[in-house]
Image (cartoon, rainbow, N blue to C red; front, side, top):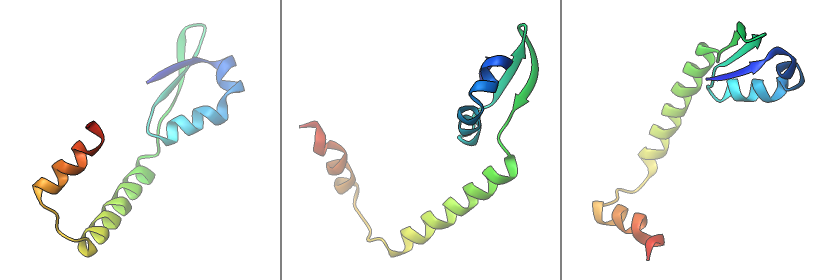
Length: 80
């Protein structure tokens, strides 16, 4: 959660909207007191999550099966 003064929020609105779009909540304050809260649109986030799950499932159906040893080898590849 991010807290920002109203005067600064006015100057950085586009950045704040990007932050909210990524799932963060932004609280706008005036004289140290919270006056507004920017929160992500839950319907949009839910729809995006469902779409991502469908895309992952579709990608998995065409992918070859891999073994545990292959996964561990990929993980360790850059560590040597």
